[in-house]
Image: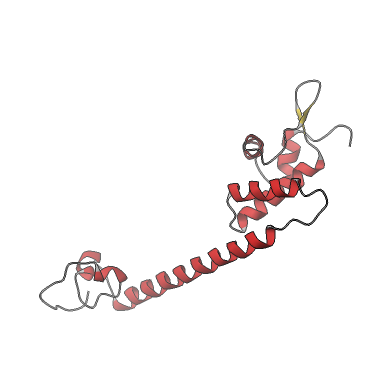
Length: 148
């Protein structure tokens, strides 16, 4: 390709806005593009692919810092397979599993609170039969009233 893609074309093709493209460029996620004689940024087709990879990795839960590290590792592999993506994907999977476990616990507590008819957080928290997990932290009440 002799001319290159302008900023708006790259952003549209990758499904991002121009500010995002420029931000990724400032962060070093995208290499600085060539410039036209008039000073316009001119990107190659690879820029669209890199932007799509960045967005896909973010949807998988990778932070921009992690994406930058993965891209940097990939740039220095010189045609050799890169150890690291598998390791990082496994680590991210473990994080996701931990979040799912936490969310499952939260969901169960909320379901129990809904089923118990809790309507007033302060009253419920002070009740010995409150299903919300923070009851252990609540000050003990000397009287046992009706739940919630």
